[in-house]
Image 1 (tube, rainbow, N blue to C red):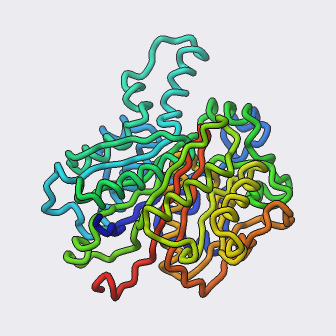
Image 2 (tube, rainbow, N blue to C red):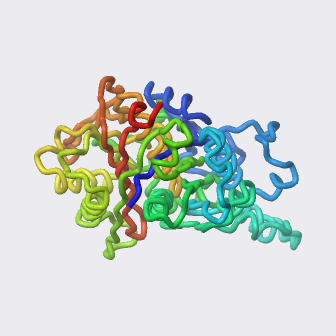
Length: 418
């Protein structure tokens, strides 16, 4: 198995649209959650979400004709992928296109396009559906457009395992590169679930947080006793991954290393988290990475802010790390960027790599009331400087029971030949 480097990162998110902006906002504890001001907000019990902002008047280097065929989730994905490729220092230059792939995770695909089509059909009772509705709404649209944009002829895969989709995508890409099946992969996730139909459907499931009337931005409170649920978010995060030796040889600025990936299936309940399942995924990831539990310096938790997940995840971390669990800094960044569903794992992977690179433990915001069932070190409310983590876990646990965990390592410039 070859070592696998991350040589490029691209991001469109509620915390910003560049790695510098995302890190600065996360470190400062600034929340991307806000009150929705859309025309349908009055129909929502909790009109809040973590929204991404892109200048609609700017082409982002994307052909105007192509842009008209992109659902919002595909637009996010393509912008992030282009950013990652540009930041990688020409990782695709001179590469056999059949040896380069695209692996993208999404939980809901093109919800805006499908919602718009249903509104036309049922709300307006019109048969004039846009001709590209299927092509815009299909889950594999984002990955397909990235492949077309960059002429990548190797495996083009879309994973849809709810909230673990992009973690699975990055993990599966790691497997392909580490085993030598592919040379370069653009991997990550994209999600744009803030359409009216999607928001109402999530609301009906009773997993969405109630809005804090005093401060809507503080509505998501992972691991806090007064947590009330998750807040939906949108965006995309993409990585360029390639063999470590190749990145070093071409003088790339290596941003981190993917050491391994583990997966498990709860096989018990469609929504209720499983302690055994979560612990199994973390253990499998450590085994794949050949990392002992005592070598893990920090964790980016799934940390949704629901009562069941946060309690279960705390117990699962204790099951894997024993007494040492109490001494591992754990960040739940969804408090700031919301739950990007299928793209959450990719954004959290990016935040983990940036946190290690800059020796900071990112804060778990809005944690004002300690919960006896959630008694670990969640880095409450303020970032912690001087945390020189070398190895991190990034956890993703999903509806349907697919759990996935990445093991990441900090890249030292001396090692990377810089």
